[in-house]
Amino acid sequence: TVVIDNKEYKTGYLAKGSEKPIVAGSYYVPVTLNSDQVQRIYFKIERDFHNLNFDFKIDNELDRINSLWYKKLWAMSLQGILFIMVMYGLLIYIRLKEKVYLFYSLYLISTSVFYLFVDSILREYLIPEFPKLSYLGVIALYPSAIFYFHFLKNFIDFEKVSNWLLFLIQKTLIISYFLTAIALTIFLIGLEQYLEQVSQLFIILNATIALVTISYLAYNKNEMGKYFILGSTFLLISAIVDAIFWDSDLVWGSFTRLGLVIEICFFSLGIGE
Image (cartoon, rainbow, N blue to C red; front, side, top):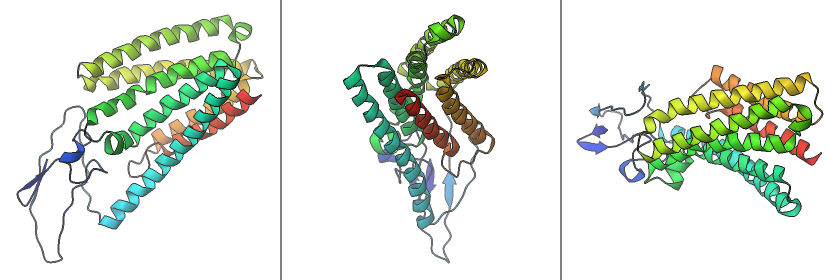
């Protein structure tokens, strides 16, 4: 809550769009000042889920708009690429009835929903009056990983490659379904603050199995596996780079987005072959 000249504003990503002075931008507060003017501004900071560490910054209107447009341009560019690839995959699936195209498209759809959450498009533009529903964007990460492994099972014939690796992937999928059910239950009963812990466990599990799969296919020089190895490796490296050189003033996960696009290109080449 911010009070400026006895007028109260609400900010934060869990505030409704109608309660915020500026919908696009969770923590922006408009202040009009003349060169010889003094204003008293009071901040009341409350947290529900996260430890807050604010770095207060004064921007002029033009800088704020340019910053938002830069971030949204990156966001919509990624959504455009995902949309094109989803439509392509679904059309091929309808024509050929090959499950690999279906799971590939479902993987991209759930990834798209996740990035709609990350880029604040869900809560600021699509459902501004229901900000807590945007947590469904976090949960979209779960089916994204599940469809990723279903795609992989249909992309590579693991019965010929490795029975133990196929067994490992199948058990990972069972655990992933279980964790997805837990995440949905947490969301439905209003305990969103625990989603982070469940999501961390989910990501660690799936990332570990993906690394094991990459390593095994690379060691055995699997012909079809080269596309999966190249695409997933680019995505993994870009995610590590983002984690090391994170800058919240820039677009969230810029390198990861680039890695995702490269992964899509390699996966598309592999499916085509």
